[in-house]
Image 1 (cartoon, helix red, strand yellow):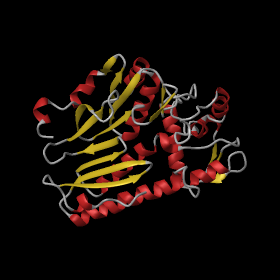
Image 2 (image 1 turned 60 degrees about the horizontal axis):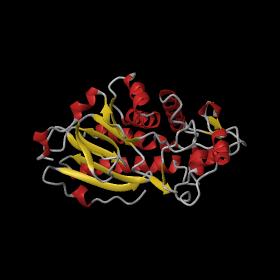
Image 3 (image 1 turned 90 degrees about the vertical axis):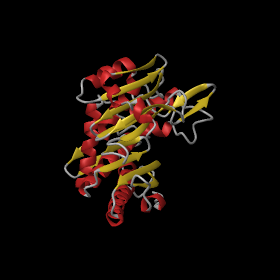
Image 4 (image 1 turned 120 degrees about the vertical axis):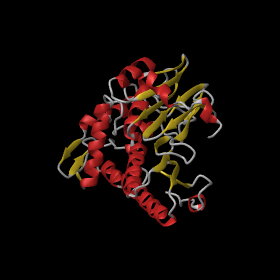
Length: 328
C-alpha cells in the first residue's frame, strides 16, 4: 500500500469534503468524507488504512509472506491453519461461489497465471495451457475443516481478487459508521459505496464510464446508501493479432469473455452484491445476465453492449436529473 496523500484530507473543500487518496489492492483508492473535526477525521483515516494494510498483508497473492501465498505453496502437500478472520473470508468465498452459480471462483489462480497481463501480449496461451489450468480450478475441490484448509492438487491456488475490493469497500463503510460519519464515499478502483451526500446534495454524483469510449462519461448517478460496481474489458485489456482480450475470464471456457458486452454497472445494498452481479452479468451476456439479477432483491442493472443500452427499469431512478447536472 502506498503512503496516503493527506493534502486534501486536512484541508476540506468549500463543501466540507475531505479527500484521502492512496494506492492499495492493485488499484487507485479514493475516500471522501464530510466531517468537521480534523481529529475525528484522522482517527477514521487511521482505522481505514490499517484495515486495508492488514487485509493486503494477509490475503494478497502477490506477497510471499501472506497467508494466501502460504496456502498456495502448500497445495498438494499439507494442511494450513486458519484463524477466525481467515475462516470468515473463506466463508465469503463459498457464499460468492454459490450466489454466482460458480462463476466467481476463488480457485481461478491457475487461469490468472496463464493469462498473465504483464507477459501475455506477445503470445497467448495454447488450448493445452488453458485446459491444464481449468483442471486445477474448482471451489468444490477445496478441503476445509475447523481451523484449517487444504488444496489437494499441486498447482492449485487461491486468489481473492474477484471480490476482495468489494469486501474492502463494505468494511470501510462499516468503519465509517463506527465513527458516526454520515457523509462518505468509498471508491476502490470503480467499486464504490456512497452514504449521505456531498454537501451540495443529499447524495453523491458517480459517473458511469463509457465502455465504448473509455475516459468519457456515459451517464451520471445520484447515489446515497447504495453500492455501485462496474465490470468491463475497457478497464484492462490488450490487443493480439488484431483481437482484443479483456481481463475478465469465463470460468467455463478459460478464455477472456467476448460476447459483445462493453460494460455492466450494478447498484445494490452492498458492494459485494454489486460486484457479484456486475461480473456475472458481464460473463453471461445481456439476456442471461439480466435474468440472473432479476431473481435477487434490489439489484439494479445497466448493460452497455453492441445492441445498445439496456437494463431493468429501476436503474433509471438513480440517473442524475438535468436540473442537478449544473450543480455537480
